[in-house]
Amino acid sequence: GGSGPAPGPGAGVGETRRSGRPPRAVWHARPGPWWSDELARAVAATLASGRGALVVVPDGRAAARVDAALTALLGEGRHALLTADAGPEKRYGQWLAVRRGSVRAVVGTRAAMFAPVRDLGLVAIWDDGDDSHSEQHAPQPHARDVLLLRAALDGCGFLLGGWSCTVEAAQLVESGWARPLVAGREQVRRAAPLVRTVGDGDLARDEAARAARLPTLAWQAVRDGLKHGPVLVQVPRRGYVPRMACDRCRAPARCRHCSGPLEAQDAGASRCGWCGREENAWHCPECGGFRLRAQVVGARRTAEELGRAFPAVPVRTSGREHVLDTVPGTPALVVSTPGAEPVAEGGYAAALLLDGWAMLGRPDLRAGEDALRRWIAAGALVRPQGDRGTVVVVAEPTLRPVQALVRWDPVGHAVRELAERAELGFPPVSRMAAVSGTAQAVAEFLATVELPPDAEVLGPVPIPDTLPGRPRRTGGPPPREHWERALVRVPPASGAALASALKAAQAVRMARGSGEPVRVRIDPPDIG
Image (cartoon, rainbow, N blue to C red; front, side, top):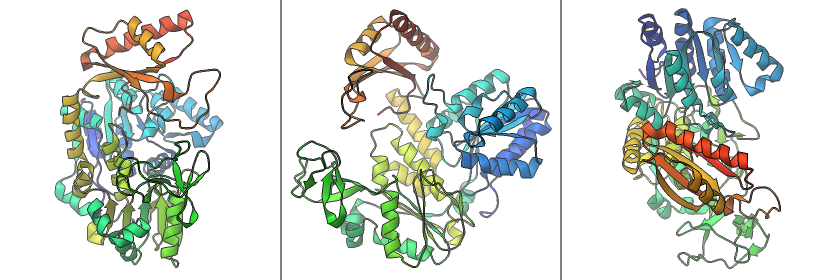
């Protein structure tokens, strides 16, 4: 049924370990809070087979949930928790216990991917699409890739779990390297909430939406949900001051004097975020429109608007500065940024996913995948539709990620994305490296590197202006907006040769003392 825990990977891990076959699975968890219990069962089954286990999760809140599940299942002292919140002294003590073999099960955040677990029998990762799994410092490893290597080198089991599905996970299944663990469609439908959409056409006809950004359907969902429990409101950005855009074509609104972004002020006025001048006679250079709209309203501003609309209901916010872990099951409005959604006791009665166009409109190859992952993560905290759980997403309903959310089919979305990546030659179907720096530095680097014969160089092209208004520095690397980026693409079989060639070229540049830096990254996550 839809009210019990989803069939998970725990039982199968011990059985396959005893049979001598290392299990490799991609697990698509059903909506609900039981995923941490299932991971704990997989760890317990591995320990029962006489081998160690390692679980990597994206943040401290997820680690705490798995930690609690492991403690309840195994008892105190049977596993180590490796997170930054523990502090250096405690974390080092835990690390030594793992190194000495006195503890053979580890759960932690990104850095735990290197934990020296003795006789490793299982490596597991939850929500591999989360940005927190990608290390930003050289050599910029991703926890999923490190665990894949450890599974191959140690001959141990591998488990990738999540509510959603990345293209990398879909490729593991398509290649036959891993097997899928997916609940039946009837089970998924019973466990998932009802998903309703509000598109551009609905917003254009909705007077309430034009006046307050929230369509009538969303207000109704909030009002009905508050009769039964808390309501979650997901906002794409934190903070208060929104950037402005054209109401007709949604082109970003810029100041006429310095081209800085316009920001909303009180009483409907707008002001430049760079020079501070007020703008009273703006018109859009793209379509000629003269009406402005908030591009993305922050979590605090949304909380204030909802608080005025529902004055008798408490409003809680969860974001970067203050992240809530749990909220009671009593009626309340919970405004959260993506990834900071607290778990509600008994589940949320409803959820609003606002400004979906802002998440889908990012110039990023993963924009659709990432938006769907964030939506499903929020929707998974909502009660099943049999218990009146409802999700309203404000996004164009014809778009593929929105349709995947309505059907609750992240696997199908990932499979189609993977097929398109194969046609375009993008990772993970190919291996790709990004070479960034000044135009001269990139040109010199590409001229000296000995690329594999089947390598294809795309670009270079200017890097988009990601640091607007930053003053030019007199020393050090130039601002990123003056940099260029070239992409080097090779078939998967030539990935190792490409990495070796780029590494050798970088070593030569460093030995010669080249002044201008060149940054190299394999399979960059931000290909636009």
